[in-house]
Length: 284
Ligand code: ATR
Image 1 (tube, rainbow, N blue to C red):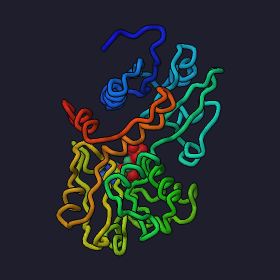
Image 2 (image 1 turned 135 degrees about the vertical axis):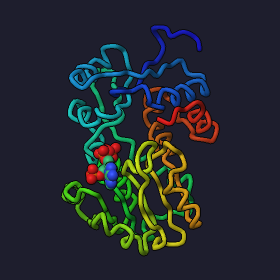
Image 3 (image 1 turned 120 degrees about the horizontal axis):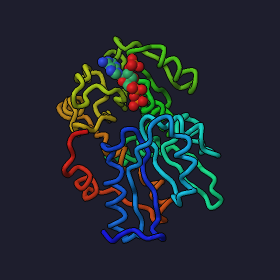
């Protein structure tokens, strides 16, 4: 890699911790592929410093940054203006600095979710059947926003802690419908899209305990978890001849709008990128 100069376009990912983030590898691949004089850095920022660090981005000549755990809500509160998606989700994962040093906050997780499913399951139509979402954390908010935007007629939501599902119902309203966590298997009857947004199935966590037999025969089963890439849920979906969609694609696709805004090139997600990002991964 040639060394950076004063002209090199600078962006990065702000998180705490940030060393497991795959984003530097992913953006670095695109910068090389498109021959762009740019750099994308991991930026570890502890919670007490988050507001100052975000405000400093344009002063340090950064064109923007991604924001990851645990800072997406703080970024939402700090930026000067928000996209409709960020407003809907209540969190910012992509910041773009304009020429006057103003900070624009976007959330590309919903975009990444939909693009990932569409690229892996071209037959998929949201309007065809209800969707069932497991989990009610930050990832669920992005998935629900995406499904509503894509015209989902009914979204069933099951979460271990019912109050968190109720918070999402109060935020999004129709077409959300809460089902009890213990009723999740019964709720699968007639469902065409199942999305796991819980941390169950992730390396080091217990598997997600579900019975997929009620799902429609052409149902798409998406796991937000991507470590491991093939979770027990996706294995069960493949065994039932459903359409398993792994979670890595959401991460790759959510990165596209930021890269385009900062570096001026619309990047493509393909197998070469997936292989590059997966190579040497320690599972985190
Ligand atoms: P994120 O913001 O990344 O989505 P999160 O807010 O920590 O992460 O949410 C994790 C989700 O996994 C939650 O829906 C959580 O359920 P609770 O709201 O009841 O905590 C779910 N989850 C984690 N461990 C679980 C378990 N053992 N059984 C059921 N759900 C679990």
